Amino acid sequence: MKLVYERDERTYSFEPHFSDEVTPDVFKGSMLALGTAWNVPPQTVEYWINYGFRKSLQDATAGTEKKVRASLKEEADAVGEELDELEVVNAVADAIREELDFRMQQFVDGDLIAGQGATKNPFRTKCREFAIKGLKASCKRQNKALPDVKTAKGKEEFEKLVQVFWLNNAKKIEAAVTRALEAEAEIMEE
Image 1: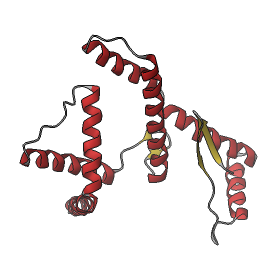
Image 2 (image 1 turned 180 degrees about the horizontal axis):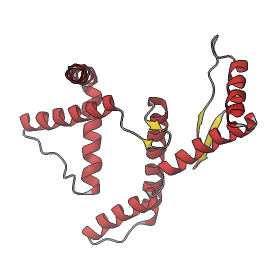
Image 3 (image 1 turned 180 degrees about the vertical axis):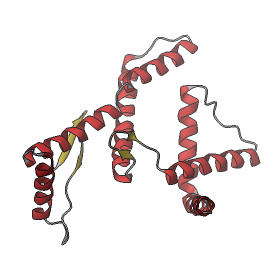
Image 4 (image 1 turned 45 degrees about the vertical axis):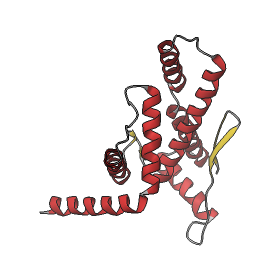
C-alpha cells in the first residue's frame, strides 16, 4: 500500500519499507487484524489510511491562498501599488509547497496525533526557542537589527534567520536542549 497525494505537479508519498521483521505478509496481516478488530474488510482500512493521509495534506494548506493574498495585498497597499496577480499565483504555489513539505516532515517526526492534529514536538519546540534566543543575542552583540515581525515580510525574514541560525548551531542547540529537558525531567521526578 502506497500513500499518495498529488498537487501542482508534485507527488507526496510514503511506501512501506519491508525488512526481516516487517515482511509484506506481516503488513497484510496487520491490515487484516485492524479490519477484523473494526469488523470491516482490510480494503476499508487501507482506504481510511489513504484518505486520512490525503485529507491531512489538504488540511495543511487550508486557507493558505487567502492568507498569502491578504499579506501581498497589505504590502501592495502600503506602497500604493496594484496587486500583481502573477506574483500572487507564484507566492501561493510556493506557500502551499512549503506547507506540504512541512506536513510531510510532521509525519516523519511523529508530530501528528489522531484527534488532535499537529502537536508540538517538545524537543523541536525547545530547539526553536534556543535558536531564537541565540539569534537575538548574536544580533545584539553585533549591533544588528532584526526584521520587524509585525509585517508579513518581516516575519518571513525573521523565520529564515532563525532557521539559518539553528542550522549553523544545531549541535550546540541540541546539546543545550537535551541538558535542559533532562534537568526538567529530574525536577519533575522529585
